Image (cartoon, rainbow, N blue to C red; front, side, top):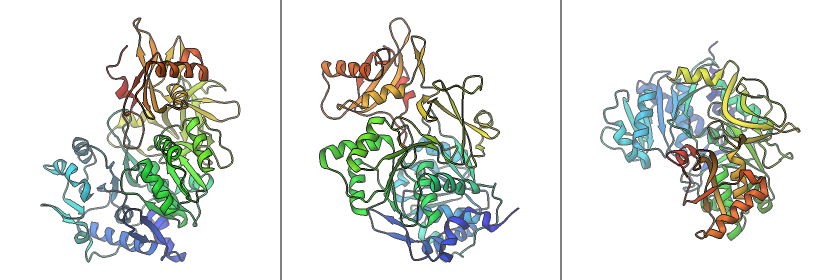
Length: 514
């Protein structure tokens, strides 16, 4: 049944004026100080909806958004939903060639882009057979129009009546193992994440001020900075630039958020920065982490510095946000916690049989936030979305207390002497050494053609010597077992990662042998 109330924009945007929050700040840009009130968000998104309709962008057509974390983003996103147009937020750190692939794959008929990103995407716009409009937030170029001109004098539209199961927006997966895939989400999925993780784990309230290092285009960041705060009328701090440890610590000091949302690599770098320069004074009540499993040592060091534990959790683009997590007052570092209320989990072996306590299996999840499909990838959709269950591709071990411990991606696991080895376990042991900032472990073959662990490490400070590398091997043996230690250790300046902070281990495996 079609209804205006089924449109996600009705719940997340328009109802706040009736709740008396119209004048409250919904968004504030950390670098510029620009703000957007709840009333301005409702009005601005309605005008964007009118501008899209006036430009001939029809319901169900795609609107590509290459937009930084700035106050125009929520107005465009919710405006598209109000118009029945499908917004497709794009990773802001990709190359021209990837943008070309995504724009053609999505068949977007309009592109809205921040001026700072125009030079990268401009070559992909040339000869695109689908784009009818290009709108730049900033100064326009030939063949484009300024955002303020695009919306000038446009009629303000109410949310279009839709079905709750209708596709609302797409996100492209981060591509940690290859080309990104278009993931289609429905209107009801947004509220499903707010009613589960947002309410029961994050325990978000109207009084919260949220700072998310993860960006809007990332499913994790979309929930942190959009879904959860807008579900209760909280305030979100937007950080437009790259979230460096120094920048995040300074923003914590200045903006005083109560909730901080980071990723493991950033937490590791921020802990190292705090070791040298001290702890920020923000009135934090909650910190969360996702993207990859948080190493036990990093979580413990953060809590020692700040007095606030990190709720490490697991989510995915396919499930829209976190479905497995530690909980306030119930944190066990080194584990991913338990199922978020509203989600069911299974751990299965290669024959889809439930594994026992102490065994490793692939994680399957069921919940109302699951995506419909991958766009134009039917075979992949059928092998990932199996009825009510979604395959995550992650391997976990079930502990006797019911908590799950991350072992690695299915493609990252390998056997040493006939026993499954978790790269993440070895990485966790390595980063617990004071000389190591980051680590990634992959399988490499020895002279006999047998798989053994090889580590790539980023050091805290100085260049290594032979004694340090041998010390790291001994450290791993002492922490997790003699057969698990890395036979080779290579020091690198940085690890290959996606824009969302996930380590791309497949790039380390490519062509590697010892």
